[in-house]
Image (tube, rainbow, N blue to C red):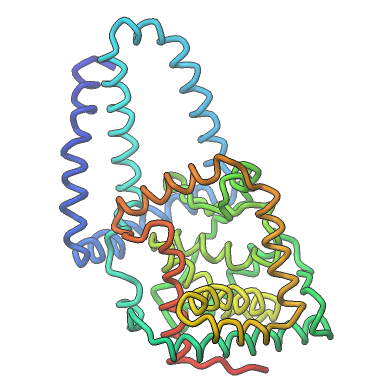
Length: 358
């Protein structure tokens, strides 16, 4: 590539950033012309192209790109030492290409209309509402745990393979589409990540590859969490980027599944977030409600805690900090803490749709 082209691409990074900042001010435009018009075509194309392949194409591409980058830097290092300005130019060029591809392919969804508006749910909730819904979730979780095990003290063991969970998740989305047509899902492309060990050390249950549109699920996480994590990553494929929003979509898709193991996973997932929020607001109520949780449910929570504990390492906070900065740069003001904002969606949804325990 000629130098003038490289220079032009590198310089384009600045107007790109300015354009993205401008588009972020117009969520209605992004919603209408990108999230509901252009993006479904892009995502549908890549999911159709990649979905039938049984392994993660994106993980392989990332690995090859990393290795080729190391090789290229090794071969060009002497040139870069003599002319460091060329190194800066080449870095800017790569960033410009990545920046354009990311936001065109998926990233503009960060600036769409918030999910709570599209679903006609309130943004805030009261402590009374939080208490009420948390109690509903505890009763529903306890009831299903006893039905599935025949005892209140036995952890639920999922009888499905992780591949079966992928397939069964689609049924939940079919049911969810009946209530919210915009959340319909087709052309599935959900895969076990080839980089699951790395994801575990980084502290992530999965991720969406924004370039291949494959939903990647960490193959090492306990099956107790597999349904909601799978549903979460599919939510990203539907064009929702805010972590609290896709957590809620994944929760609903798992809850709507006819399978009781999936419903148990969903209720236990939402209950953990609501209890965490209640602990910050009223520790006395939190302690009282926590004491009502069946020992078997707590055993499932301990399984998840033990899994993440074995992968704790000094670099995990660095990865989380980088992701936190990235989220804040894309209008998620609370950064990684935005995951916890799923509580407002869960509470307001179940105040309108109370849980009926079996």
